Structures are given as structure tokens and as C-alpha cells.
Length: 214
Ligand code: NAI
Image: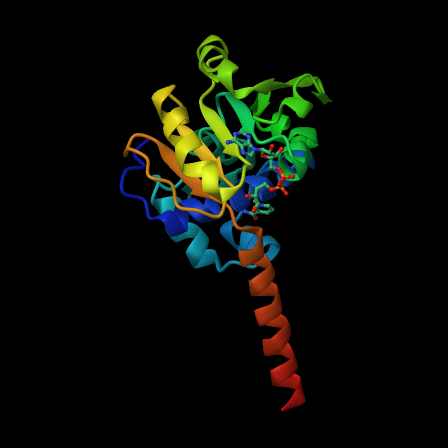
């Protein structure tokens, strides 16, 4: 499937399509029209058709989309047709919360290890993983074919740790540290800022209040 040059805006909508289609599939629904998807997802039917046209359509005119097929194809585009081995760097509040969230595994994201540089944490069990010291990182990454690292460490050390991860062959970094990382083009970084989402919420609260106070 050709998906070169697809805009990040389209890619950004695919996980949501994937989630909704997963729910339809779980309900045993076999077919869905772009209008029905539009009603459920609150996205226009033409937006849905345009998005899917980027990947060759997926549907037949007047016939709707086959839910299971579409779910599978979008999953492939998102790289969810294979499992990914992850490590977490930073076994603090956030690192532990992510490690304890089981639902990632349903999507094929397998947490294999959790690392920290605080000796007081070494050996502590988080779910079924013991916190390991950073010196064990290189051999662990190699032996467990780790492709994604989750960075939940303070920003002042994140750049340096990211460089080490790149040297060890990590292909993707899910970066929660509030700092931009310098990585080569063959390594992908996804920055997560929960506060961005919170700021959107306060914007909408304010907009609503302004609208109805007027
Ligand atoms: P925390 O202090 O509970 O945990 C940080 C852990 O990183 C500690 O266990 C510490 O020993 C370890 N660590 C420090 N330097 C290290 C290094 N060089 N190598 C390996 N481990 C190291 O902090 P918390 O609350 O878990 O937050 C972690 C990071 O995530 C912080 O940078 C925080 O600002 C950020 N954060 C980001 C959010 C986001 O939406 N992007 C939301 C919440 C936190």
C-alpha cells in the first residue's frame, strides 16, 4: 500500500478511525458507510472519503466499507500488524503509571524493561519487570530487540539519554520529557505534552463562557 507523502494531519486522524472501527468490529458490524462513520465520529463524510482516498479508497461506491478489512488496513498503515518491544527510561511516577497500563499490550506494544539511574530503585518490581540500572541498557536492547524507548526522565538529561538510545539502535522515542531531542532522520520521535490537551480544554471552557455570557 502506497502511503508516502501522506500529510501528518491525515496520519493523526488514523488512530481515531482505528479505535472506532475496532468498536464496530467488536459489535459484530460488518459494513459501514462513510455517512454512518461520519455520524459516529463527528467528522464529515467527505473528510472520511478524502482521508481514505490517500490510501487507495478502501470502499466501493454505494456499498460502504468492510469494517474488518478497513480496521486491518489502517492497523497495517499504523504499524500495528506487528508487535513492538518497548523499554521505559525513568521509573518514577509517570514511568510506573505507563508500565502499569495494560491496554497498550492489546495493540501489540510490549513493555520489556524499565530503567533508572537511581540505585534505590534497582530490583523494585513494577508489574512483572524489575527496575534495571542504565549500564544494562545496551545488552538489554540488543537481546530483546527493543525498537521503541519511552522517555520519562527529567528534561536536563533527556538529550544525552536519547543519544545513547540512538547509538544502541532504537528506532522510535516516545518522549515525555519537555525538551526537543536531536536525533538522526532514521529515528522517529513523538513528543507528548499532556498539558497541551489541558490547555485546549481551558480554551474551550473560556470560549463557551464568552459565547453564553454575551
Ligand atoms: P519522577 O521524578 O517521579 O521520575 C523521574 C525518574 O527518572 C526518577 O526515578 C529518576 O531517578 C529517573 N532519572 C533521572 N535521571 C535519569 C537518567 N539520566 N537516567 C535514567 N533515569 C533517570 O518524575 P515524573 O513525574 O515521573 O516525570 C518524569 C518526566 O516526565 C519529567 O521530565 C516530567 O516533567 C515529565 N512529564 C511529562 C508529562 C507530559 O505530558 N509530557 C506529564 C508528566 C510528567
